[in-house]
Structure formats: structure tokens, C-alpha cells
Length: 229
Ligand SMILES: Cc1cc2nc3c(=O)[nH]c(=O)nc-3n(C[C@H](O)[C@H](O)[C@H](O)COP(=O)(O)O)c2cc1C
Figure 1 (cartoon, protein in one colour):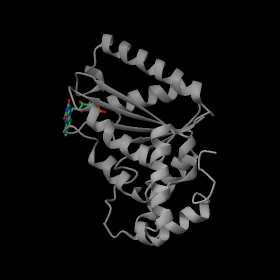
Figure 2 (cartoon, helix red, strand yellow):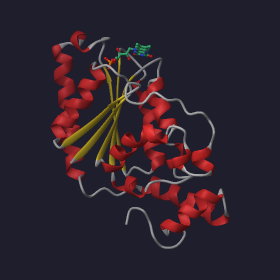
Figure 3 (cartoon, rainbow, N blue to C red):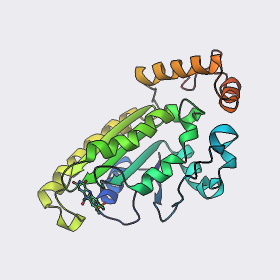
Figure 4 (cartoon, rainbow, N blue to C red):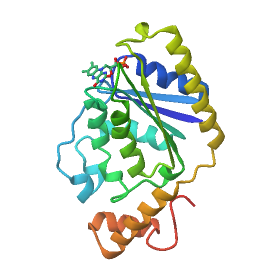
């Protein structure tokens, strides 16, 4: 199993521990990126990725190793500590660069058979909204199955997390790992994704932006082909 972890911070605290423990339980090859250490660019808003091609993004080359790891993963993990109720700015900055991959534009075929996990930890509250920040991208990229693991650690560092809490976290991780392993190789998107895809297909049939329409045409999705088949 190929696991790619996108860490929304550059340090190895509670969130990193949780994401790594999950990867360990899943077993396989793990590729990790720490943000902003490994990619810290902000989208310039040029819209070249939408209108022309993703290769026209001024950060395309720097992003390429992350894009390759995303595409090669069976399981994608988005892991971010909660900062003021949301995913970190570094995580948001990365996800902004993949707007062109949203279903309304040019989703990558491989996404529909992947699983993704959104992991966030907070001292108290905010994991729901932080996980939503990341799950939104996973859903609109077309990821077939998305899980959310939000943990209130009642601490600001892993050393401060109680042993009782750590044991509870481990149990949650074990249960989630079992679910993910059980689905490995058999992922198909649910009704919500398929319905959204159908609406996007209608939009592209009628005509949207030229680059996106051509992509849908080339993928055969305006005909009978579907990315999950
Ligand atoms: C800038 C900043 C903002 C934070 N905002 C929140 C918050 O909105 N809610 C919360 O419960 N904890 C908040 N925290 C605490 C962290 O989310 C929490 O300690 C988390 O477990 C840290 O994960 P890490 O060890 O991976 O960095 C914040 C911490 C920082 C540094």
C-alpha cells in the first residue's frame, strides 16, 4: 500500500504522531511532505492552471514531487493541527494549487479509487472545521472514500497528552486502519460523488471553459466512460 502524508506543519507534534501511527498500522510505503518546509508557495491567482494548463503554474516544478506522490498513493493523509479553528495556512496554500483538479475542472482519473484520511488535532475544539477544509478538496478531487479523524488532545504538545488519552487515540487509529485495509483495492465512489460528477458532466456537455471541456472530451467522460470503472 502506498501512503502519502501531507503534513500541514513542519514540526513533528501530536498531529504528525497520529498520522504516522495510522500509516504504521496500515503498513506499506510511506512518503511524507511537511508544509511549508517542502512547499511554501502561495497561489498567485494567475488562473493559468484553470485556463491554459497546470504546467503553466509558476510553481509547477516545485509542486511536481508532491503531485507525483499524491497520484501514486493508495491512501492520502491530510494532517493538520487546528489553527484558529481551521487547517493551517500552509495546508490551505498547498490545496489552493490543486483547484484545477476539482471536479468542475479536470479531476484526475486515479482519485476515484483512492482513500483519503483527514487528520487534525486541537487542544480543545475546531477539528470538525479543520477536517472540512481538507475533506472539501478530497471530495472535489473525486477521492472515492474519505475518513475524518479529529482528536481533541487537551494539550499543546505530544508530551503533554495523557497516557489515557494516548491509549484512546491508538484504539481509534486501529479501528480506522482496519476499515481502510478492508477496502483496499476495492474503492468505488459513493452516490454523492457520482451525482456531483453527473452534474459536472452536464456542464461540460453544454460548454464551460475550453481547456476543461477538451479534457472531459479526451477522457471519454462526455460519452460512456467513467473514472471509477
Ligand atoms: C496558532 C495556533 C492556533 C491554534 N488554534 C487552536 C484552536 O482554534 N482550537 C484549539 O483547540 N486549539 C488550537 N491550537 C492548539 C493546537 O491545535 C493543538 O495544540 C494541536 O494539538 C497541536 O498539534 P501539533 O502538536 O501537531 O502542532 C492552536 C495552536 C496554535 C499554534
